[in-house]
Length: 359
Ligand SMILES: Nc1ncnc2c1ncn2[C@@H]1O[C@H](COP(=O)(O)OP(=O)(O)OP(=O)(O)O)[C@@H](O)[C@H]1O
Ligand SMILES: [Mg+2]
Ligand SMILES: [Zn+2]
Image 1 (tube, rainbow, N blue to C red):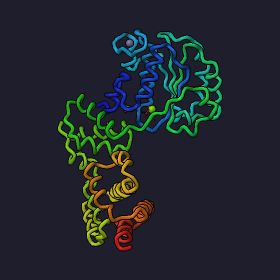
Image 2: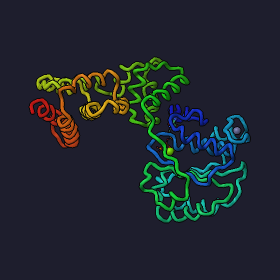
Image 3: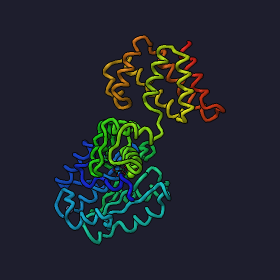
């Protein structure tokens, strides 16, 4: 079975979620026939860099100008993954020396079919110095039929000489709502019914990666029926229920030591990952700082938490000061570090809640 995110990889700019600034710029340059010869796509994992590069390659070779029409012979070849004029090089797997050398020799030949030959160089920050230099020579005088798309998750590691020779596009992390939208699209194509809460939970767990979101959805669909609820999502991901983190936040905020210690025991006995639980609790306190600081920051909080969780925080922070909240964040994250070393997995969290409820 094909994994979900490959099966439903967008085939058209219209299906791309969240990168509107890039899609608009690329469509405009395609329509006015002013395409650059070298692009640099930077941004976090799983947000569409490779996908957009492939759509661009397809559009450049589409028999209808300025599109991927997805029906002409060229587009169909791209969609079957058989296009000869798309070359993908993964700099991470072999550091690219041989590939770039080959590329330097072969780039001058006009493509056997189609108008443009598009070279996508993934994780280009991992190219060796030699490969980089070879690439630089090619980028200085690219033949008219060649288009390069360099992709990277670590823009800081790309040499300035490369950056200055490319047209740079920064891919953004999609918002939780945009991830939810995409999940709904994919679920619909699979004829699955995805509850709004379930979609929201998956989106939060994906932490900004559309690929991760889709692969979580795929995991769930592999074991579940076509109707997906939030309970099932939590069960399959082995998440302690988010409810528990909310409850813990409330207990700590109200200095209820006994309640907090009891909850840790309960979670531990049910076999939940306290590591994941601590991370959730950390999110609560971190976002509490945001909410305490200024209501205008709420839009960021919505990237991490569900509406009823935000409400719970707002209610409980009235009596908490910012110093207390930031101490909580430090304590939880320091103690998370020591988890791996502790003989008793509950211990670091226990110490944290005792400190936070008694001092
Ligand atoms: N902006 C987006 N809109 C719609 N779907 C997306 C988007 N970004 C990613 N996806 C989904 O996630 C999958 C992986 O995306 P893609 O390979 O383009 O990510 P990437 O940015 O190249 O990540 P990496 O840095 O890990 O290579 C796609 O097949 C698609 O299903
Ligand atoms: Mg990629
Ligand atoms: Zn076409």
